Amino acid sequence: MTTTLDLTQFISEAIEGKRDLFTNGSDQIWGFAETRFDEFQSAELLMGMLESEGFTIEKGVAGLETGFIASYGSGLPVIALLGEYDALADLSQEAGISTYQPAQPRGNGHGCGHNLLGIGALAAAVAVKDYLQEHPETQGTVRFYGCPAEESGYGKTYLAREGYFKDVDAALSWHPHSLNAVMHGSSNAVIHGTFTFKGISAHAAAAPHLGRSALDAVELMNIGSNYMREHMIDQARIHYAITNSGGLAPNVVQAEAEVTYLVRAPESTQVRSLFERLVKVAEGAALMTETTMDSKYEGACANLIPNSTLEKIMHQHLVAFGAPEYEEDEYNYAKAIYETLPLQNQQEAGALVGPELAPLLAERPLPNFIAPYSDERETFMGGSTDVADVSWNVPTAQCITTTMAFGTPLHAWQTVAQGKSSFAHKGMLLAAKAMAATAIESILYPEIVKEAQRELLDRLGGESYDCLVPADVQPPKRGE
Image (tube, rainbow, N blue to C red):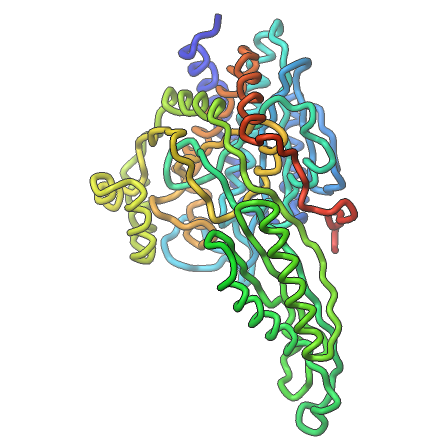
């Protein structure tokens, strides 16, 4: 019988033995910095690594050109490891420094650490494969899901909608962070839509009465959405970006303008209702300006369903591996990053750990401990993740590990700067070890999976998965 100690030692040796392979892969994806649905180099790299490890690859799943599934083993249970690898626009940043310095003007950057996330999940899948290879009597299948466009577009939603998780028994993931812990809680569901207004151009001085301004329509829509905010539940969010202001000439009435929106709420029914109201605001803006409006559904994802059965096992393994040890130069770099953070970031991070730990982490901002786990109180994440759509279909657990200085906000240049650091690599490999151990234990003891599935049914309370993305909406192709 495999003991926890045996499993810990096996996985540590398996992952540490390929440390350079994994860290180099993460650094390459950091350099690619490809955004939603355009992660062609990143996907090719990941598929090549998995093929060399003996996985079979299914490409282009669910109509996703940069999505794929890599499989190893046979029989039940089937354990999914979820990998992401998309970056964010306009977050280019030089690595390894503590000052804001874009590597490329208006370039992309891994401001959410998905270069680490994808390779960390891959490393876990490889370790599970190594275990199955060394124990041929063990039945079970490990799958790595290559999931594009988590930041916007939500690749996992398409995978869930098309049934790619129907035969999966459990799913595991993780996320880069500034603490080591197992996540327990829910998240906002989200719908992403783009609104294009078309009017009539005219000379803004000589004949303004002949023009109909699409930019006016965008501005009126934004004003209308601002008034909506008073009449939403507290946890809901609406945010936007003007993606086409209609040109640079103020003496030309803008004939076309465009704005893109994210609408969030704790439940799918709530976010649907809010988005429908937003569409009406856009229609009203078009009526007021005598322009036309077209809306495009960009993507969506559901709210997250936690699973304490799997989370408790993941926490036990996270504790067994323990937090990484850090060198003095790592603490010094993390301290330099911490000092760039706004005071409010520092204060809010300190409030999460309490008055005893906060000053210690402010001085040496790399947490060298595993946070305690409790399923008595669920946390709520104001952001969104398409891991949620997986969690409606299959029991799902996630951990976070320290890959950045304490208090570092996601979607910021500081996250990008730390994405190739030695402590980021250490956090990535810790997450890989915890996921691999949880996966193997779930394979060895099928009753864990059965209990996790019972818990999921209890949490759903008779509800079933209702995908927020309409059936006629497909993921974009290259160049769209």
